[in-house]
Length: 473
Image (cartoon, rainbow, N blue to C red; front, side):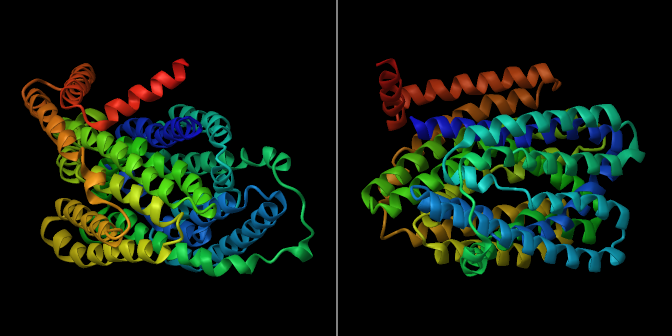
């Protein structure tokens, strides 16, 4: 039950992190226009590379390391302070590189405002709370800051000249949100004399997880950068808005990765191999159940979402969402295999190889596909890259797990999803789309999907009933 509680906390928090920007972007897309949104997406994609270097893979590595050591407060405290010091040094180096780059930027003032996101990295210790599986603190305290940031956007961002102010508000929201993690740390760890700390012993394993993070950023961020360079920053905005919609629904599924990583890591440290495999089967099945519904649901609504959510001038977003929707299943699966299985069981090499393959495929395909088809090409490159990542990860675990157990219910979810998709897609492209009609179509989709699930009776139905019975007792 603790895992379920943590999942609900983290799913809610991850959804909040995506929904609040989505709510704000529906407003700022109309205020800043597609030009302003494109400039923000492009400059943010640039600062993301510096943020990535400053993070140095510590979010994943720290999460796993704290999970390994959480039963020994002294060793856990040493690891915490060593990783904090290591991250500070990495961020300082990243800032030096950033200020070297700044004079060559086409938008130096906007880039300077974006650097608040880099400063915020120093104070991000969310990985520690994830490692000890205390997700409540990361959710409740940070939520208020995010809501205040959203309110500030509505109050202060009034026209297209307020783009810089919008960037500052977003950066300050991240910065203040990270500060909220620190007041509780004194009750969880002990002070360690500086002479006993050896931060560089974590450098090599952090870099081992930093490399896949770099690779992931390639096909998460590089598309926006390349679209901006090759076709104009407006297309960067279209891509960013479509990706935001996809990531909104995906956040519910990928939240399992953050929750399960420390849980599996702790089980691995205790040598519970059979339990680890069973956790993968359960998690993979749950993710399949969610992501199939999400993919078909957003695909059915997609074509009218651009103008409905973001306003006039954002028509291309709808087709982009439709093309990108398959990544919901693909990323969900790779999250289950990579984040919840390969990383906590110390199979970092296979995980790294998978995302590097995806990054290489993305780079190679981006040039011709963006050149010939622009935004559509970038979306196709993204989907193909995720196919390669997930396909390779499935191949690496072929001798460890049973494919039959992994996919035993998938065909049932697929049938349920298709039955749901057909009426939603037809209705959405027949009637004039409004917020009310979209909500009614969502409700219809949920009802149809769950009715089909009850008729097909995958194993998740019995598991859900067992959990409810335990709670009643």
